[in-house]
Length: 212
Picture 1 (cartoon, helix red, strand yellow):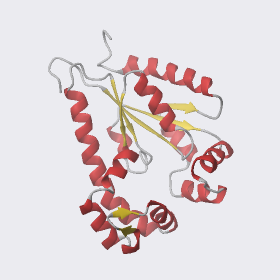
Picture 2 (cartoon, rainbow, N blue to C red):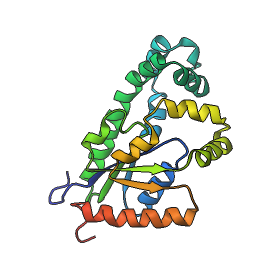
Picture 3 (tube, rainbow, N blue to C red):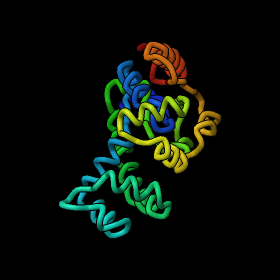
């Protein structure tokens, strides 16, 4: 921690696939938050030769070739096989948590530190990571909106989106548990306004925002 400065607010950010939590994260970053992206760290983890070796041994040798993880095949495997998903998470999640902790420590050591550190985590509630946060945000959108976004972005069918939803906590339950809920089912300007309101509330909660 930077001497003489209060700690940043720790914010957990999550939402169902296609809801737009990355869009919210970008908007928070543009306002001065430090965003730690668990998905990006997970991709970095699977570039680590030691991680790839364990995935090949414990999840499937066919998923790793020429020092690379076949992401599409891995996604298909783990969303269809809960045991494979648990094995993969047991390998990747500790790596991600250690890297996230290092990023947060670096942010806290800055002079001044950011007022808010955002942990952008798809499985925030499922893995109990919300317990360590000062506040949580869930980004929501109707299923048909999310499915259309994912079809355009990744070519996923409605059935594939439903299967992936089924591997996570129900979106309505996430919203019930959240400190704040952002509805991202509408226009970009509506999301901008919602994040601006959220940012004001976060600064009011942050011990590190005084005088900024």
